[in-house]
Amino acid sequence: MARGSTVSKASGAYNAARSHPYVQRLIEDEELRNNLRDAYGASRHAYDRIAKNGKPAQRLMDDKKVQKDLRSAADSLREASDQIRGKRRRKGRLGRLLVLGVIGAGVTLAVSESARKTVMDALFGAEEEFEYTSTTSAGNGSGT
Image (tube, rainbow, N blue to C red; front, side):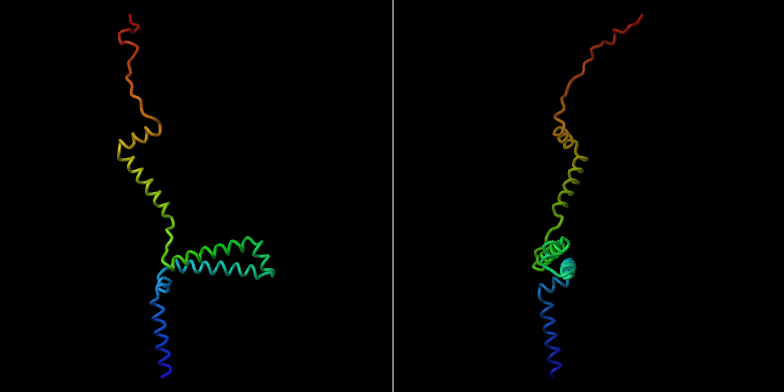
């Protein structure tokens, strides 16, 4: 009976953990898992460099690669923390908005003559209208 009780407790623990929102995000979100993997890799690399030749405090202060790895690990952990709490960073949102705006402006200029005229006037100044009158007359030729 002890074995059945252990299995049922383990099953209950498994179901409770699986239903937890953080565990759900970890299971479903590949980007979150990648951030955690990146953080682990960067921190492991920094630890290996620090532990290599003794004097860890000296390595922390002087070794630029260790500092870069630790910065990378911290950034990855910060992103993972935001993701697991449901605070997604919107990467590239401004860039996508800018590209969409440029495309929209191009389509507008291609389709609308009044928009083209307005842009040309803004860039190069208003076009002055003038009348051309010839100073030569058709009858004053040098004929015999």
